[in-house]
Structure formats: C-alpha cells, structure tokens
Amino acid sequence: MEVSESVVDPDLLKIVAFTVKESHTVKEISEAMGIPIAKAYSLIDWMEEHGLLVEVGKVRTALHGHATRYLSTVDSGSIVLENNRLVIKCHHKDGGTKVYDTYLISNEKKE
Image (cartoon, rainbow, N blue to C red; front, side, top):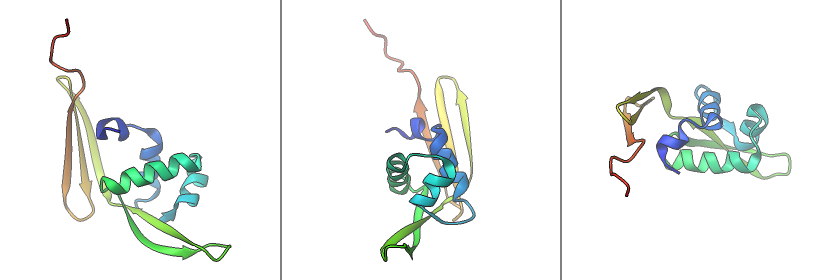
C-alpha cells in the first residue's frame, strides 16, 4: 500500500485522530471508530511500520492476556494536490517532519 493511498483512507485518519492525545488498544480503536477488527490490525501494523503510531505499553485483558496500547506520533499534517503531485507532510510530536511526494499520473505516454 502506497503512503499516498493510505493517508487518505478515512479509517487511517480516524485512528490518527483517536490516538493523538491518549493511547488505545486495537480493540478500543476498532470499537470506538467502527472499524472492523481485522482492518484495524492491518492499518495499525502499517502505521507502526511507517512511523505514524508507536507502542507505548501493555494492559491486562479480562482473560489474563495483554494488549498493546498505541499512540499517534503525528502532531499535525497537510495534504496538497498540485501539478499532478500529491504532497503529504506529517509533522511529528518529536519535531521531525516526513514528506511523501507522489505523482498521481505517470508522465510516460502509453501506446
């Protein structure tokens, strides 16, 4: 999944917004945001891999297991569409900025 495709996924944006100030488990995210649990796990794995979420601890579950809590690393962001390019800027809480720049339509002519 491309970054440009992912950050416009409404479920991904819901997860970022829900975890900006308070950490949550996958189950809490799934239930509160109305995202199917399998999709929530998939998105959270992807987001963690791309630095949009971090693990911040574990909590005990009712069945004596443990569930990981996740917190968004994103402080703010912007999405700009300009000249056939999608430019996404993620400003992180640690002060860093990550820029994703993608051409939406290939400049190559097809025969």
